[in-house]
Image (tube, rainbow, N blue to C red; front, side, top):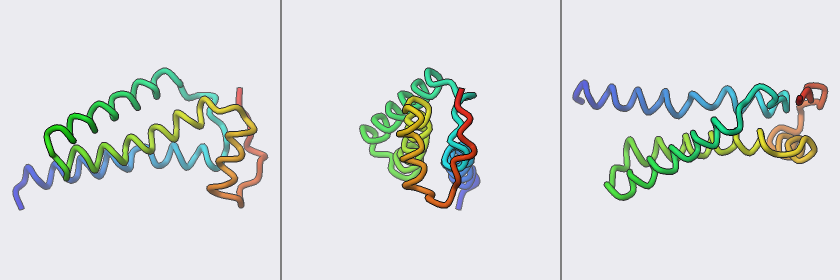
Amino acid sequence: METVTIIGYLAAFCSMTSFTPQAWKFIKTRDTGSISAPMFALTVSGFALWLTFGLMKDEWPIIIITTAVCLILSAFILLMTVLPRGKKAAVADAIDPTTKRTGDRER
């Protein structure tokens, strides 16, 4: 495998996993007070455009697969940021029903 391909796959892995800790933190704490909804709206828009670009160029391995995962995770973070507290808790409870609601510190 070429070095450039390895670098591409490593970059894809880093990009896909970079949103996971933040998404999991929201599920556990329900706290989204420090997240900027406009920034994540821009991030989601960017990933949606990259996904469209990848589909148009038929670039499956890096652009489409990586971007689709990043789009889903960043859209989840945006959704958790803009949802009202009760709905946010309902989503988090559905994903992880073992978490207690004591972390509900939304500003």
